[in-house]
Picture 1 (cartoon, rainbow, N blue to C red):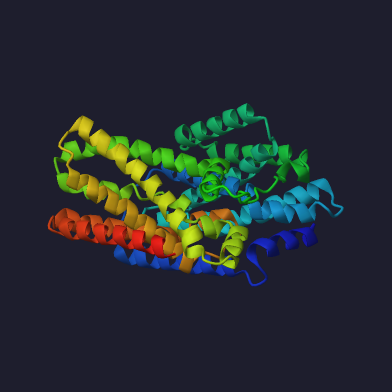
Picture 2 (cartoon, rainbow, N blue to C red):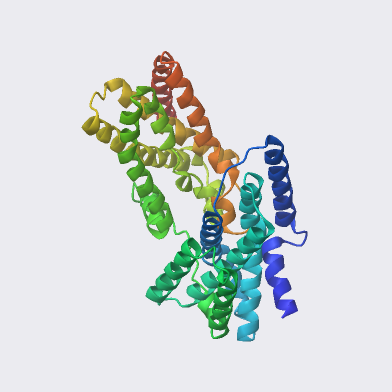
Length: 402
C-alpha cells in the first residue's frame, strides 16, 4: 500500500511537494497579515463547521471528477492491484491534497479573523475529514444519488442544529467510520470516469468553433450553473439599486456580472486544445476573435437581463446605459482573451486548482475598480463610450485585414 500511495502522492504533489510548500506560505501570509490587522468577525461554530464541510466536499468532488485524475487512473487500472489498497490509497492522496491545498487556506483565513478555541479547531478538522470520506463514498455509489442526497442532508442538519451537544464530535467520528465501511466494498473502477476529450468540430462548416464552444458548455454543467447564477443575480440586483436609490451602482452591476470566470479559462483547462491552437497558424484571428465574441455574448446576455429587470422595476434605462453595458461586456472579454492567450495557467494538478486560481479574478477586479471610478465620476462615461467606439472600429479593421 505504501508504494501505491507514493505513486498517487507524486502525481498530485510532485516530487518536490511544490503545491504543499506554496499553500503553507499562503497560509502563513494570511495568518500574519490578518492577525496584525486585528480584524475580528464573530462566527458561530455551526457556521464554521458548515463552511468547512461544504467547501471540502465540493473541492473533493471536483478532484474525484478531474480529467487529470481520470487519465492517471486509466494507466493505474491497467496494472494488477488489490481493490481496497487501491481505493484507500487513491482517497488518501486526493483527500490530503484537498485538505492541505484548499481547506487549509480556508481555515487559515477564518481562524485569522475570528475568535476560536482548540475544540472548534478539532471539530473543523474532523468535519473536513468526514466530508472527504463521505464525498468519496457517495462518489463510488455512481447512480445511487437519492441515498447520497439524503445522507448529506442529514449530516448538514446535524452540523447546523447539534453542534453544541456533547455527542457531536463522536457522532461525526462514527459517520466517518460508516463512510470507511462503505468504501471497503468499492473497487477502483468506481472512481474511474471516462475523460472528456476536446473534440474540435471537423469539416468545412463556417461556425465550427461556435459548435465547439456550445459543446464545451454542454459537457461542463458547472459552467452553465455559474452562468445561470449570474442571470439570477442580474434579475435581483435592481432591487438593491431601488433600496439605495443610487444610480451610480449600475456600472458596479455590469462589473459584477462579468464574474463568469469559468468560460474565461478555456485554454488553461484544456491543454490539448491549447497545443492544437498554438500549433496552427493565424490563430489570433481564427481562435481568439471568436473566443472573444463568445465571452462578449455571454457577458452581454447577463447585462441584457440586468437592464430588462432594471427597466421593469425602476424604468429609466437610457441608450447611454446600454452603451456602458456593451463596453463592460466587451472590455471584460478582450482582457480575458488577452490574459488567456499570453498568460495561460499551466501550473495546476487538478481542475480545482485551476478553478480557484487567483489569476482568474484579475479581470473582474479591474472591472470593479473601473466601475467604482465611473460611478463616482460620471464624466468618465463619455471617455468609455469613445474608447468603445475605437475598440469596435479597431476590431472590424483587424478582422478585415486578417
